[in-house]
Length: 211
Image 1 (cartoon, rainbow, N blue to C red):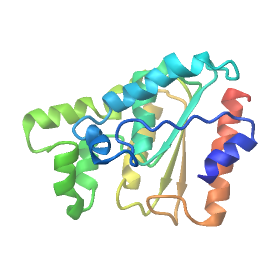
Image 2 (cartoon, rainbow, N blue to C red):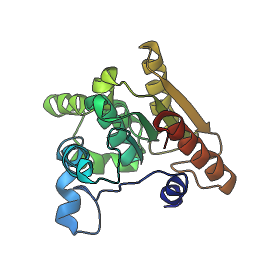
Image 3 (cartoon, rainbow, N blue to C red):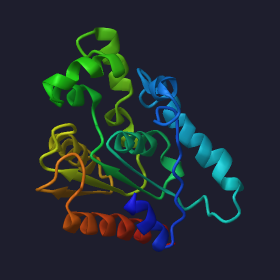
Image 4 (spheres, rainbow, N blue to C red):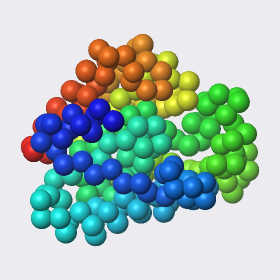
Protein backbone atom coordinates (compact mmCIF):
# COMPACT_ATOMS: atom_id res chain seq x y z
CA UNK A 1 0.00 0.00 0.00
CA UNK A 2 1.90 3.08 -1.22
CA UNK A 3 -0.38 5.35 0.82
CA UNK A 4 0.80 3.72 4.05
CA UNK A 5 4.43 4.23 3.08
CA UNK A 6 3.75 7.82 2.09
CA UNK A 7 2.01 8.57 5.37
CA UNK A 8 4.93 7.18 7.37
CA UNK A 9 7.35 9.29 5.32
CA UNK A 10 5.30 12.33 6.29
CA UNK A 11 5.68 11.54 9.98
CA UNK A 12 2.51 9.59 10.76
CA UNK A 13 2.37 6.31 12.66
CA UNK A 14 0.02 3.99 10.74
CA UNK A 15 -2.00 1.20 12.34
CA UNK A 16 -3.50 -1.35 9.96
CA UNK A 17 -5.68 -3.89 11.81
CA UNK A 18 -6.87 -7.21 10.42
CA UNK A 19 -10.34 -6.99 11.92
CA UNK A 20 -12.94 -9.71 11.46
CA UNK A 21 -13.91 -9.89 7.83
CA UNK A 22 -10.29 -9.61 6.70
CA UNK A 23 -8.89 -12.16 4.27
CA UNK A 24 -5.90 -14.36 5.00
CA UNK A 25 -7.29 -16.07 8.10
CA UNK A 26 -9.61 -18.56 6.45
CA UNK A 27 -13.10 -18.33 5.04
CA UNK A 28 -14.87 -18.49 8.41
CA UNK A 29 -12.98 -15.40 9.61
CA UNK A 30 -13.71 -13.53 6.39
CA UNK A 31 -17.42 -14.32 6.64
CA UNK A 32 -17.74 -13.08 10.22
CA UNK A 33 -18.74 -9.77 8.73
CA UNK A 34 -21.70 -11.20 6.81
CA UNK A 35 -24.97 -9.68 8.03
CA UNK A 36 -22.92 -7.70 10.57
CA UNK A 37 -21.59 -4.74 8.60
CA UNK A 38 -20.73 -2.01 11.08
CA UNK A 39 -21.10 -4.35 14.05
CA UNK A 40 -18.30 -6.35 15.62
CA UNK A 41 -15.88 -5.30 12.88
CA UNK A 42 -16.41 -1.68 13.97
CA UNK A 43 -15.89 -2.62 17.62
CA UNK A 44 -12.60 -4.27 16.70
CA UNK A 45 -11.37 -0.86 15.59
CA UNK A 46 -12.74 0.81 18.69
CA UNK A 47 -10.99 -1.74 20.91
CA UNK A 48 -7.70 -0.98 19.19
CA UNK A 49 -8.19 2.77 19.57
CA UNK A 50 -9.25 2.69 23.22
CA UNK A 51 -7.45 -0.33 24.70
CA UNK A 52 -4.39 -1.15 22.60
CA UNK A 53 -2.85 1.93 21.01
CA UNK A 54 -3.00 4.18 24.12
CA UNK A 55 -0.56 1.75 25.78
CA UNK A 56 2.12 2.43 23.15
CA UNK A 57 4.23 5.28 24.53
CA UNK A 58 5.53 6.12 21.07
CA UNK A 59 2.10 7.30 19.99
CA UNK A 60 -0.13 10.24 20.76
CA UNK A 61 -3.45 8.43 20.74
CA UNK A 62 -5.29 11.71 21.15
CA UNK A 63 -4.30 12.82 17.64
CA UNK A 64 -5.77 10.16 15.40
CA UNK A 65 -7.38 9.96 12.00
CA UNK A 66 -9.07 7.13 10.13
CA UNK A 67 -8.93 6.34 6.41
CA UNK A 68 -10.32 3.47 4.36
CA UNK A 69 -11.26 2.55 0.81
CA UNK A 70 -14.40 0.75 -0.40
CA UNK A 71 -15.58 -1.37 2.55
CA UNK A 72 -12.90 0.45 4.55
CA UNK A 73 -14.53 3.69 3.42
CA UNK A 74 -17.83 2.44 4.81
CA UNK A 75 -16.08 1.57 8.08
CA UNK A 76 -14.48 5.02 8.15
CA UNK A 77 -17.92 6.61 7.85
CA UNK A 78 -19.37 4.41 10.60
CA UNK A 79 -16.49 5.17 12.94
CA UNK A 80 -16.74 8.90 12.25
CA UNK A 81 -20.46 8.88 12.94
CA UNK A 82 -20.71 6.44 15.86
CA UNK A 83 -17.44 7.29 17.65
CA UNK A 84 -16.90 10.96 16.84
CA UNK A 85 -14.69 11.70 19.84
CA UNK A 86 -11.97 9.29 18.70
CA UNK A 87 -10.88 11.28 15.65
CA UNK A 88 -9.29 14.55 14.63
CA UNK A 89 -9.89 13.85 10.93
CA UNK A 90 -11.20 11.16 8.60
CA UNK A 91 -10.93 10.22 4.93
CA UNK A 92 -13.54 8.12 3.16
CA UNK A 93 -12.48 6.65 -0.18
CA UNK A 94 -15.57 5.55 -2.17
CA UNK A 95 -17.37 3.94 0.76
CA UNK A 96 -21.13 3.24 0.80
CA UNK A 97 -23.05 5.99 2.59
CA UNK A 98 -26.59 4.60 2.55
CA UNK A 99 -26.89 0.81 2.39
CA UNK A 100 -30.37 1.11 0.88
CA UNK A 101 -29.30 3.23 -2.09
CA UNK A 102 -26.02 1.31 -2.30
CA UNK A 103 -27.99 -1.93 -2.67
CA UNK A 104 -30.15 -0.34 -5.37
CA UNK A 105 -27.22 1.13 -7.30
CA UNK A 106 -24.79 -1.80 -7.47
CA UNK A 107 -24.60 -3.80 -10.72
CA UNK A 108 -27.45 -6.29 -11.21
CA UNK A 109 -25.00 -9.21 -11.16
CA UNK A 110 -23.90 -8.21 -7.64
CA UNK A 111 -27.35 -8.00 -6.09
CA UNK A 112 -27.84 -11.74 -5.31
CA UNK A 113 -24.56 -11.82 -3.39
CA UNK A 114 -25.26 -8.67 -1.41
CA UNK A 115 -28.70 -9.94 -0.40
CA UNK A 116 -26.79 -12.75 1.33
CA UNK A 117 -23.89 -10.66 2.62
CA UNK A 118 -25.70 -7.63 4.05
CA UNK A 119 -29.46 -8.19 3.68
CA UNK A 120 -32.42 -7.93 1.35
CA UNK A 121 -33.93 -4.46 1.11
CA UNK A 122 -37.20 -5.94 -0.13
CA UNK A 123 -37.75 -7.59 3.28
CA UNK A 124 -39.07 -5.19 5.90
CA UNK A 125 -36.98 -6.38 8.87
CA UNK A 126 -33.79 -6.64 6.85
CA UNK A 127 -34.34 -3.21 5.33
CA UNK A 128 -34.72 -1.75 8.82
CA UNK A 129 -31.46 -3.41 9.87
CA UNK A 130 -29.64 -1.96 6.85
CA UNK A 131 -30.91 1.51 7.72
CA UNK A 132 -29.48 1.11 11.21
CA UNK A 133 -26.16 -0.08 9.76
CA UNK A 134 -25.94 2.81 7.30
CA UNK A 135 -23.48 5.66 7.93
CA UNK A 136 -26.27 8.01 6.86
CA UNK A 137 -28.10 7.19 10.09
CA UNK A 138 -25.19 8.21 12.32
CA UNK A 139 -23.11 10.87 10.58
CA UNK A 140 -25.10 13.74 12.09
CA UNK A 141 -22.86 13.05 15.11
CA UNK A 142 -19.63 13.59 13.15
CA UNK A 143 -17.27 16.17 14.65
CA UNK A 144 -13.91 15.88 12.91
CA UNK A 145 -13.27 17.24 9.39
CA UNK A 146 -13.72 14.67 6.61
CA UNK A 147 -12.24 14.31 3.14
CA UNK A 148 -14.24 12.22 0.65
CA UNK A 149 -12.54 10.74 -2.43
CA UNK A 150 -14.50 9.24 -5.32
CA UNK A 151 -14.04 8.02 -8.88
CA UNK A 152 -16.63 9.38 -11.29
CA UNK A 153 -16.90 6.08 -13.20
CA UNK A 154 -17.15 3.78 -10.17
CA UNK A 155 -19.65 0.98 -11.00
CA UNK A 156 -19.66 -0.47 -7.47
CA UNK A 157 -20.00 2.53 -5.17
CA UNK A 158 -21.37 5.02 -7.65
CA UNK A 159 -20.41 8.68 -7.44
CA UNK A 160 -23.92 9.56 -6.27
CA UNK A 161 -23.21 7.83 -2.93
CA UNK A 162 -20.36 10.22 -2.16
CA UNK A 163 -22.18 13.21 -3.62
CA UNK A 164 -25.23 12.46 -1.45
CA UNK A 165 -22.95 12.16 1.57
CA UNK A 166 -21.21 15.49 1.01
CA UNK A 167 -24.39 17.37 0.10
CA UNK A 168 -26.33 16.14 3.13
CA UNK A 169 -23.51 16.73 5.60
CA UNK A 170 -22.86 20.21 4.24
CA UNK A 171 -26.53 20.98 4.88
CA UNK A 172 -25.92 19.97 8.49
CA UNK A 173 -22.92 22.29 8.68
CA UNK A 174 -20.34 19.52 8.93
CA UNK A 175 -16.72 20.15 7.84
CA UNK A 176 -16.48 17.99 4.71
CA UNK A 177 -14.63 18.15 1.39
CA UNK A 178 -15.03 16.16 -1.84
CA UNK A 179 -12.32 15.20 -4.32
CA UNK A 180 -13.63 13.47 -7.46
CA UNK A 181 -11.41 11.89 -10.10
CA UNK A 182 -13.28 12.12 -13.38
CA UNK A 183 -11.28 9.34 -15.06
CA UNK A 184 -11.23 6.71 -12.28
CA UNK A 185 -13.52 3.85 -11.32
CA UNK A 186 -13.57 1.92 -8.03
CA UNK A 187 -10.05 2.95 -7.10
CA UNK A 188 -7.42 5.55 -7.86
CA UNK A 189 -5.05 3.81 -10.26
CA UNK A 190 -3.56 6.31 -12.70
CA UNK A 191 -0.15 7.52 -11.56
CA UNK A 192 -0.93 11.23 -11.78
CA UNK A 193 -4.16 10.71 -9.87
CA UNK A 194 -2.43 8.69 -7.16
CA UNK A 195 0.09 11.46 -6.65
CA UNK A 196 -2.71 13.97 -6.28
CA UNK A 197 -4.78 11.64 -4.08
CA UNK A 198 -2.02 10.67 -1.66
CA UNK A 199 -0.85 14.25 -1.31
CA UNK A 200 -4.42 15.38 -0.67
CA UNK A 201 -4.88 12.81 2.10
CA UNK A 202 -1.56 13.46 3.82
CA UNK A 203 -1.92 17.24 3.55
CA UNK A 204 -5.44 16.96 5.00
CA UNK A 205 -4.23 14.86 7.90
CA UNK A 206 -1.19 17.07 8.47
CA UNK A 207 -3.45 20.10 8.69
CA UNK A 208 -5.68 18.56 11.36
CA UNK A 209 -3.25 16.29 13.25
CA UNK A 210 -0.02 18.28 12.97
CA UNK A 211 2.43 15.31 13.11
